[in-house]
Every structure is written in C-alpha cells, then in structure tokens.
Image (cartoon, rainbow, N blue to C red; front, side, top):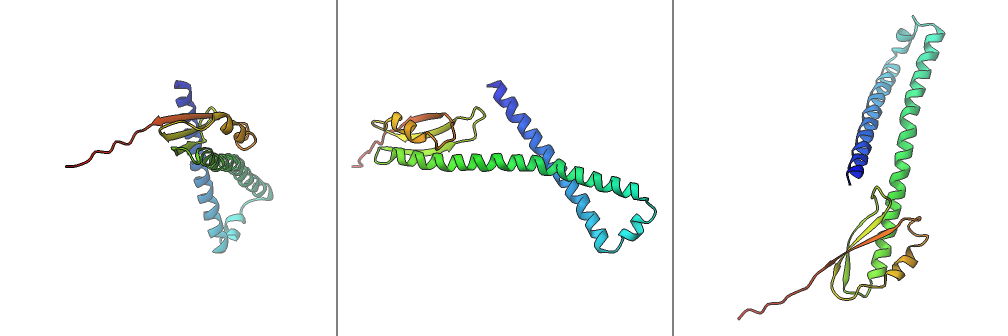
Length: 159
C-alpha cells in the first residue's frame, strides 16, 4: 500500500509542477504579446543582433514544447480514464438490472489499472461470469474488482 501512496504523491507533485510551469510560461508569453500589441517590439529588439533574436525564439519554442507535450499526454490519459469510467458505469448498470443491487460508484482510476464497482443490496448477486464476458473489449483490458455491501431494510411499526 505504501508504494501506491508514494506513486500518488509523485503524480500529484508532477502535476503541480506542470501547472506551475504552464502558468509561468503563459504569463511570460502573454506579457510579450501585450508589449508587441503596444508597439514596444521595435524598442526592445533594436539593440539585439539577429543571433540573440534567434536564441530568444528558440527558447520560447522550447518552453512551449516543454508545456505542450506533457499537457497532451496528461489530457490523453484523462480522456481514456473518463471513457473507461463511463463505459464501466453503463456496464455495471446493465449487469445489475433486475437484481436487488444498486451500483453505488465506479472507480476507474486505480493505480493498478483495476476498475472497482461498489454495489449495495441484498440477495443473490448477478452472475460474475456475465459481467466478465460483457467487460471484454469494453474496458480496454482492465481487470474488475467488485466490492459488495450487503444491506437489509428493517421496517418497524409504530403503535
């Protein structure tokens, strides 16, 4: 369990660093754009030679790539996780249809790649083989974990 917490902390730190760098570069580029619009580029660039301008453009492009590539990867992973969560929820609803169980939540973002269904109810659980068969191809090779919370309804009459 400790390794999973450490992995989560590393992801959180990396995400925070990416957000910081993105904001920093966006502020710098926006500031530069404002100066260009206000007519300052002539004053700012006149004392510099062509080599200095090329280096400045190269640094700006490198900073842009430094942000665009990690953001693209992160966005891709979020889209895939969202798609799996949506498919999982629909799959769970279909699987439990007609039973005495309700799908309470779906966790499709576990670090081990497992999709966890939390179901609540009483009585006989629908066939796990049916769930497994329906999940093939839908959950992109992810394993399924089903957590069952048994519940009973007790009715008391007042006199």
